Image 1 (cartoon, rainbow, N blue to C red):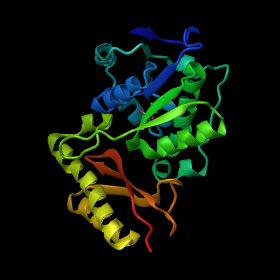
Image 2 (image 1 turned 90 degrees about the vertical axis):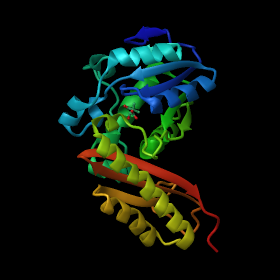
Image 3 (image 1 turned 180 degrees about the horizontal axis):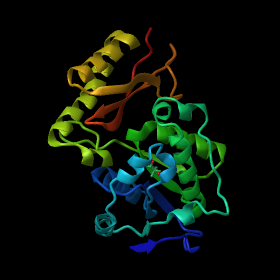
Amino acid sequence: MIILKDNENIFDNKNLCLVPTMGALHEGHIALINAAKKTEQEVIVSIFVNRLQFNDDLDFKNYPRDIEKDISILNRLNIEYAFFPDEEYMFPESGFDKLDAGNLGKKYEGNSRPGHFDGVITVVNRLFELIAPKTAVFGAKDFQQLFLINKMILEKKYNIKLIENKTVRNNSGLALSSRNHHLSKKGIHQASFIFKSLNAAKDEFIKTYNTIDAVKVGTDILIENNIDLDYFEILDHKTFSPPKSTTKNFIIIVAAYVEGIRLIDNIQFKVRATK
Ligand code: PAF
């Protein structure tokens, strides 16, 4: 594995699959990297804790970092490149493109974390400029992020194929996240009710086609388990907006706090035409 701090022009004319990460690698990232390896392109994993996507400075400072462990995981996975740029290189004083995630970037996750998605698409765009990958892999857990990156790719006419990788969960259904490091054992158990709430809302929606009832079934489970809710929404999967009568592909998204830690998750499903 070659470890790089800048692009040194070695990525030119390469057939690369990029897995962007902020480090603190866990099974979820390993699944992304394994999906990248399946492309049979050369795999490059970037590790960069992106200050621009943290609206809270303390959250940025407390974000788990363990470079030694990350490198040993990447070595074991036998990938071609690890990219560890520093802040000056990613965001040079001479200037870089600061992108705006638009209206959709201000909703749901973006409503609670102002500027978050502007920061995400700015850094991902910068990585795309520096690395020019053919494909890039992102996890389905951060679906709004995936949606906005896809939109950015279309708008900027990048010839980059996005691979959406299924959310990796522990035995009780909790989506793996670097933030889970901050939870106690009890918190991990409590947090498993987030995925249960999504499943219950999905089942209710498939039975009744009633968004309000389905959201209530889901959020009741969170309330019963002392989980503080931020949002719980049923959306059209294609438009990431409230569903229409013609919607067939749905996504339910949730953000909630367990032991003060913000966790997000979603579930995607299809429903045959209602009538
Ligand atoms: O999903 C993440 O870990 C980050 O948002 C990403 C895509 C690496 C950009 O910093």
